[in-house]
Image (cartoon, rainbow, N blue to C red; front, side, top):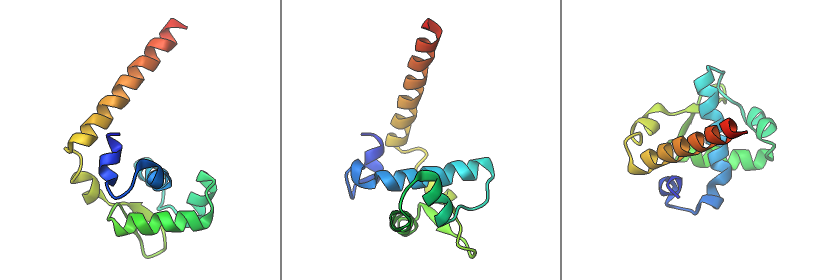
Length: 110
């Protein structure tokens, strides 16, 4: 629900593929990988190329990612910087930390 606030134009299910594509690009950026292509994204996520193109068009249009001159895609740092202090982002972080703590406890109990 916290993540949904960042996508007020649609419900979370309607943007699920966009979230997957954006997360793949962000993880690739974090790992220092080269910009991701439509083919990379389609193959890795197992999504049809047409879906990937639609997602990328929406993400570029919203300023979430950028397309480079060679056709690759990377995250747009300004987009994250403008949201890092948003309430919903803090709630997402809290939820992740809570889930990680619970998983750690399950692992220790096993």
